[in-house]
Each structure stands twice: as structure tokens, then as C-alpha cells.
Length: 414
Image (cartoon, rainbow, N blue to C red; front, side, top):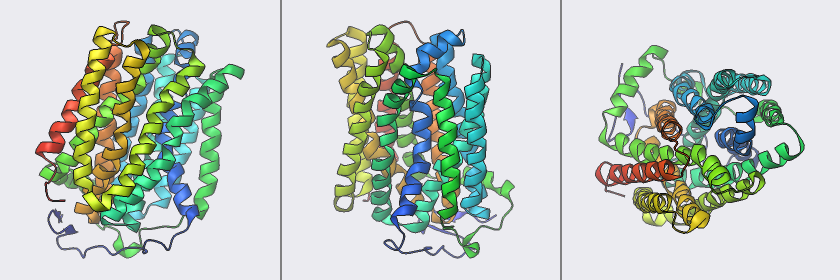
């Protein structure tokens, strides 16, 4: 199997891919569908967070066990991408997205019908395997349509829209459990999946047959092996992956740190959680405006520095109790906001270097991000001691890791 050349951004022995369409020729409907596809991950993890304490009672499970419903989802989301990415490089983007959506709907229905935490974790796993096809291939579609800093700008624009999912998700979940049982949340997710599946009929195929790879699917793992040996790829993957480890530590740890330890009402938790999502949107706007002037790699390193400082401040607040709920929430929200400077730039930085295997690159990035998310959400459950300290300590650890990867591995030439 021929492997991509890192410096040329093409595949040795294979013609470099051509752009499917020029920027500006695709309509807002396509961009809207891409935004919905990219929002599935956040919606499926965030909307049920206010219901976690109620679910723990109904399913006879503790805080640590309920955290594993998030970890199980992240395992499926991480591993599933390694299959969907290379499959789409060979058969196109639309078909795998549709199959994944069917799996997502089935998993959501299973979650709604679960009567034990073990079943809930299993159905969350299936739900995630389906959802990750949408997110992985939406990123690949962006690379099919755009390149360079324009791709980073477009990815940030999409993320501004998709950031509404974590902003509105917990608030929506809080409203649902105020008037209906927690199971209604998962019925709502199944209905959303059905509506999106119907909308896929209007999504154009962006990977033309002549641009599809011809090697057997089994060769994808050789491509993954080559990619992880590239220094730049490790830099982009590590910077984004460590950040996501902190993000999912935050997702798994704040319901109990805020609601149980600091006695925040579940309905108000959604508003507090939404501050981080608002910060993501603000940082993405900054990224859209500055990426062509400063370059995506420079902004990536700035975001990693900010995440490191915010993580260390979170650890201090969690350990000392300084500032109460505000003292803890402020640096946590700042950490989450750094997603707006890191995620789009890490993804497009890697995709721009290896465009001939963009599906595999997107899958590897996503698998790493959600793999560290599994680690973060699992650790916050295992280390739970009834205080916010494990949450703060893990945020500091992941923030420091993101900065080290950005400084030592991401290329300096912008």
C-alpha cells in the first residue's frame, strides 16, 4: 500500500485529489445539515446531564456508575470512527452517514427503554457508534469542499453553530425532566435522529468516485500506523486530544460538583453549563476573524496556553474552595472556551497535511479526542470522593498535556 507523503500533502503513487467544488458554490442548506451532523455528539452527551441524579435513583446506581454511561458512549464514539473514516474514503460520505444514523436511532430507543445501568451503558455504546459516523464524515466533507486557512475558518463557522447544542442541551434536558420522566430525553434524541435521516436526502455526495481509494478496507490500519508516526500528526492529535480529555472530565464531573456539592438546582445547572458553550462560540468567532491573519497553528498554541492556565486555576479552586461555586465555575468555563481556538485548528491542520486520506485522518483525530474523553470521564468516576478535587486535578493535568503537545510537536511555520 502506498502511503501519503507528509510534506507534499498527496499520496505517493496516487494523484493528488482535486476539490469537489469551489467555496461559495454550495448552499446554506448543506452547511446547515453539516452543523446538525457535527452537533450530534454534544447533544447526545449534554442533554441528559441534568437528569443524571434522577437516573441514578431510578437505575439504582451511584455517581461513579452513572459516569460510565458517558464513558461507554465515548468508547463507542472513539472506536467507531476508526471504521467509518476509511470506509467513507472508499465508498463516499452519504451512505455511511445514513447507516450510522439508523444505529443512533436504535441506540436512543434502547436507552429510553433501559431498566438497569448496565443496559443503559450498552445502548449508549450503540448510540455512539452510530453518532460518530455523522461527526467524523462531516469533518471530512468540510475538507472535501475547502482547504488551507479557509478550511479552518469554515470549521470554526460550523462550530459556532454546533456550539448551540451544548449551550441549549442541558437547559433543554432540565426543561424536559421538569415536565416528563427522564426517559423522554432519549425519545427526543430518537426523533431528532429520524428527522436528520430524512434530511440526508438533500445532502450532496462530496467525494467523487474518481477520488475514492481503491485499496481494501483492511489496509486502513496500515494508514493509521503511518499517520501516528508523523510528528506533526502527533502534535495536532495530542493537543486536541488532551483538551477533549479535560472537556469530558468537565462533562462527567460537573453535574455532581455543581448539583450535589454546591447545591445548584438541576434547572440552573443548564444555565451554568451553558456559560462554557457561550465561551466556545465567542472563541470560534475570534478564530474566524484572526485565522487568516495569524495562522491556525499560532492560534492553536495560544488556545493550549489558555487551557493550561485555566486547568491549573481549576485545580486550585477545587482544592481550596476559594470563591465557592463562582471560583470553580469561572476557570472551568474558560478551559471549555479554549475548544474554540483548539479544535478547528487541530483538525484542519492535520487534514491539510494529509488530504488524500482525509476520512482516515478525521477518524484518527476523533478517535483520539474521544479516547482521551473516555479516560477523563472514567477517571473522574473512579476518583470521585464527594468533592470537586478530582475534577480540578484532572483539568490541570489535561490542560498541561495540551500545551506540551502544542509547543513541542506542532510545526512552527504558520
